[in-house]
Image (cartoon, rainbow, N blue to C red; front, side):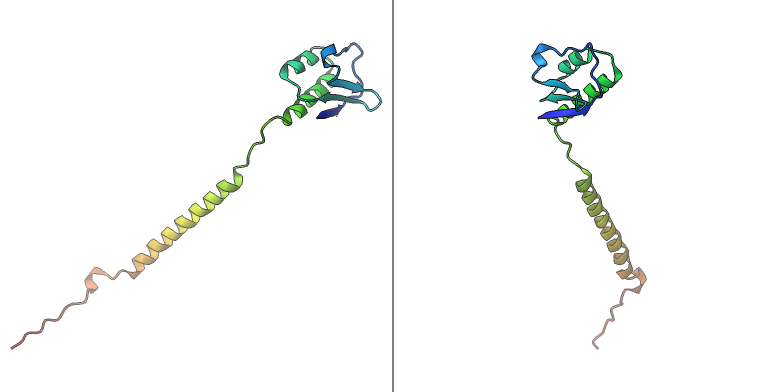
Length: 122
């Protein structure tokens, strides 16, 4: 995959290494610096060392990030499962509190136990 970023002009003293000619290019008509494939940190360092121009460095860094995104694993969101877990735990806690409150209201006081009447046969 090829990625491109805007760069108004390439510093005049930059000559890309021969081994990278099929990977990096600058299109002066479109004002774009392009890189094909994944850019390693070593390649980035090699290309960054070619010039100290701030615009060139910024464009190169942007290309480095873009090429890294295609091979970097995507982070999975934990937000939805965590929210479901919190909702279930809250519902269970509310049910337990409700049960405890209503259970207490159905208990009969200790002094109000029915008394048994004894009958005596004579």
